[in-house]
Length: 83
Image 1 (cartoon, one colour):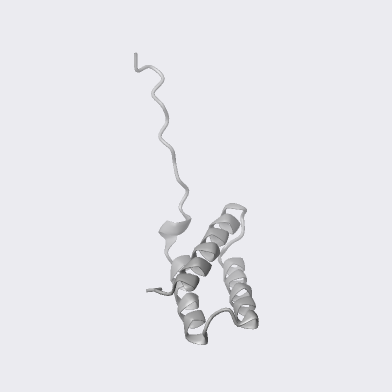
Image 2: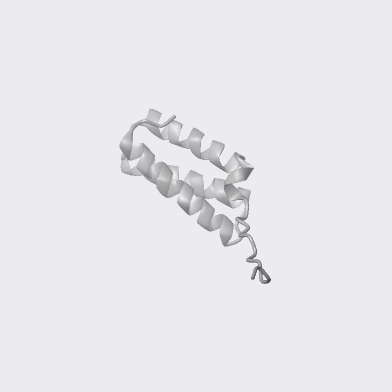
């Protein structure tokens, strides 16, 4: 579980980007590459401590392994003959 506020912010941005990439047609191999690049950029900038980056990576991988995060949201169809 992430507890550092900056790490949580990075996690939220990362997961939003992953869902956006998924909706644009990219699949898990590309999502994993995106995570690797994102984490490399954080390491390069020294934005977070290394143990926080490691935790962020674990949580991001757990996020892409959960199929419920990438299911299509099906909206119910309105009833045309209600009245």
